[in-house]
Length: 67
Image 1: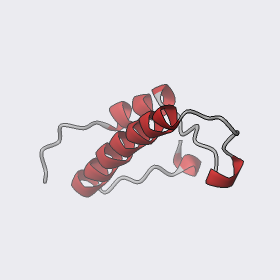
Image 2 (image 1 turned 120 degrees about the horizontal axis):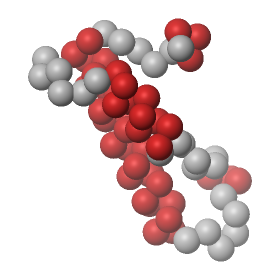
Image 3 (image 1 turned 90 degrees about the vertical axis):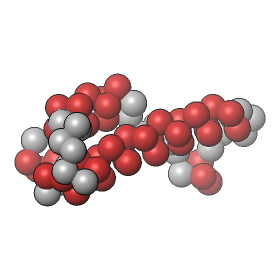
């Protein structure tokens, strides 16, 4: 797309602000509210989409060994 609207710093901020806290499906505690799970999934979808757009524009990958 080459819009350059997303920065590496923004991606890192979003990953820190909205960490992937979703447990594997088999480990979801009984009684967990489906709305909370859907909300967390939505957060992760946005972070992943913005990360992919950044990678497409800049060729950067979020590699922990590079941090």
